[in-house]
Structure formats: C-alpha cells, structure tokens
Length: 66
Image 1 (cartoon, rainbow, N blue to C red):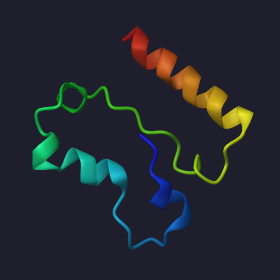
Image 2: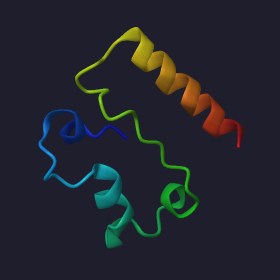
Image 3: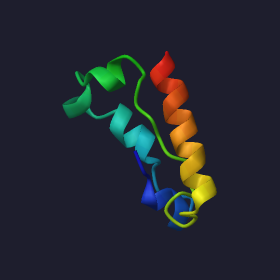
C-alpha cells in the first residue's frame, strides 16, 4: 500500500497503516488478519526512483517467501 500523505503531509495526518488496520470494514481481510499487508516506504510518492522500486520488489519477494 502506498501512503501518499506520509510523503507530503504535516505530522498531524494519521498514517495510512493505522487507518487501514483499525478499519472495521477491513477487519476480516485475510492480508490484514494474517499480517501480510505490505506498506511501501513512506517517501515512495515523492521519491519514485529505480532504487525505491527495487527496494519495494525485494521486500515483496521476501514477504512472499514467508
């Protein structure tokens, strides 16, 4: 998941991970129940570089191995 607000907002915004994980509507989603949700680095939205995407793909690959 990509949290665009984390990269461009002030410190008063609530992180997307908190909003998603505390949402009653998403409580039964298997990815959240089983702790498989992946959150991209907070600066991804403003730092869309090959290094950033390489890191994301490497982290996703590691998570898929679990």
